Image (cartoon, rainbow, N blue to C red):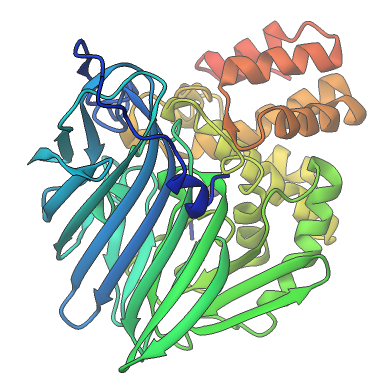
Length: 458
Ligand SMILES: [Zn+2]
């Protein structure tokens, strides 16, 4: 958001199998990645490399049948490991390196015990077969997240914790992996996911769509959205633009695909080249969903987006998707930057200037509760998408720009994108980079704007 309104499958097969002489002294992997906002999210003891998901969904019955092929690497000698999957879905079988494994499901944890201890630093493969009727979850801030049913299918947006509602995985954002989606649906609807559409085939009244997301992706940025969509896949300028538009979507969708290249060209000039092999968007008719999400390569919208919302979600492809925070409390690294992108795009197209946007946001009175939230930690998962994360985050960047000058400011942003491409980085890394690139002591600026409550003076 949320904004109110390379490994291939073939490579994975060649990973070494765990030998028969496995280390008997393995220990269980942690049940969480250690994020204070969502302690159970993610898992320890292994690194997910690639998900090959084969899904069959029937919107009429709401039934999902899935197979998840996971390629992973152990980061400790592993006697047992967890995946995140809600237990409203029933796991039918699990194999590890081709051998049946025992497992239990409890809440959002799928606990797998392989027949033999997995050796540290060795690759292994997991196949999980599961089915059930997936449903969304309600986040600490009250919004719907995950497999959100619509009148004709699914609006699938997963920030911060929805991925566990439809596929098993290591779903903390620090464990990125490539994804391939093979989704079969009735011929009357379309299944659209992240990355490149590589195949579409119909048989017996059902259609299978294969999407390949070749760059690593955090689970919260994955989507498999299903419904009545006009699907268009074309090359426009330097971009492969793939759009899916629900004919019932609110707003005017004329030229939706063509709106992307000018925005991406502009931001590529500021931040460095667009990080993905394709782009586009999913425009659904989902009046019950109050937000859009920057799902990787292809943001999802509950209606036709405005220019500023389109710019916001596309800026996330650099800030949030390619460079992803390390902990949820660093969410301003996503939303502050995307909001600043809105301001930049507004000025670029001759609407409100960046300075006017800053002035408007800064005009909030000092006693306004808005100023009580430090930018770099909104305080808890219920505040993940509060206004200061967006507006105070964008203001922080504008004040930084004023302090170091345009050349250094955009050099900082380009270095951030280049040095952490497809990875994770935290607020401390951004502060250190800003000081390194600018050669200035920015401790006071960041202290006031990122870490302390209260309205900073200018
Ligand atoms: Zn956002």
